[in-house]
Image (tube, rainbow, N blue to C red; front, top):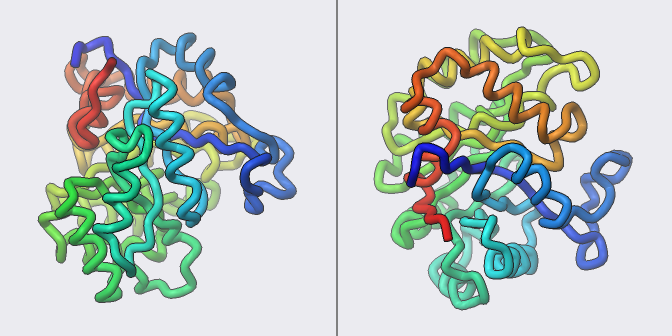
Length: 283
């Protein structure tokens, strides 16, 4: 990968004609169809050559559709899909890999943030499923709220053979100005070398109408200090970011907040880390 190859490691697409996204109801910025045709102009404007497309709902029918997007678009280098971690994991992965675009399956994710059981990631059946994800050389994306991070830490420690990526920096409570406990969690999580972090989703955790770079900087600094850029990757979280910022604003803010990094570190953050962690290759 060249130093100029930039990757957006986290975005979404959905078509309401295929499937309702009930979580977008009441959110007019999001309650419509989003396609690659909507995204590509933003990628071009920001010199982003490839992306990782991430699932939005725990539905087995969604992931083949995402893989088809990767099959049809040279911009989609990888897909993080969904499987039921508690049931026939290897068979589910094999099925997805047999679909058009199946070679783009790089990881899986479950909406753990929506699980009422705070210990969901510690369930024996879930951890057995995670082991099978690792056996398939896939990444597991962790989507949790701060009150679930400690269980995520124990899970990452218990499964050193599995590769993990923490989405959205674990969703720190930026709007509430809460940082100390979350900082402790990031430091503890970073001690495990089998986990990386996505620098994504922060604008929507801040005051969505009045956020500033000053609000985000302490949280960005914690992540970079704890993990270093070799284990941090930029993600736009588009179109969800539009609740607080445009695609261009998310990119320019990330660039500004990390302006003090050296060129190699910026290359890692904006491309090399995602490429290495997910095994991405440009066409």
